[in-house]
Each structure stands twice: as C-alpha cells, then as structure tokens.
Length: 114
Image 1 (cartoon, rainbow, N blue to C red):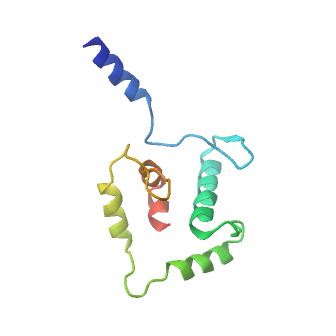
Image 2 (tube, rainbow, N blue to C red):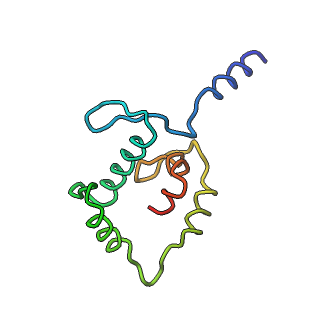
C-alpha cells in the first residue's frame, strides 16, 4: 500500500498536461508564455510548411498556408478537429509528426486553427 501511494504521488508531480518551458534554437531556455508560444509557432510552421518559410513575414505565411490547406472537395471544419482532440488520449505514443497529443491540447483554439 505504501508503494502504491508513493507511486501515485510521484505521478501527480509529473505535469505533462502543460509545457512550462522550452529551448529556443540557440539552446536558451524560454519560460515566458509569449516566448514559449512563439517558439512553438515557429517550430510547427517549419515542420508543416518547410524550412524556408520566414515566420516574421505574416502575409507570405498566410498566403502559403491558404495555398497548402485549400481542399475544395473536403474541407476539415474546426468542429471536427475539436472532436478529434477530445477523443485523443494523453500519454500515448506520438504519431508521424512527433508531436505529443498534450501539445495540441495545450494550444487550445490556436492549435485548432493550425
């Protein structure tokens, strides 16, 4: 019983539901929410759109996103994305994109929009 209690207590101290810090491209640790969010945005932008995209130029980024995400025959609605996120279980293995489900859930509406 003592070991079960100790194991449960140790699991509660692991906070996998939210990302509190992340390293930037230079290896420095970022802890401010705005900078962490900006780093994740840049990471996902490079992951999904290729390495050559400049995140600081929003018009170019939006034009490229619209071009890549345009599917006139079967558009994916935000409601379907939200429903899929609700069905995903935390703590499972990552998919082909190597992004944990917890990251998508933490992003909330921003993640749904991406």
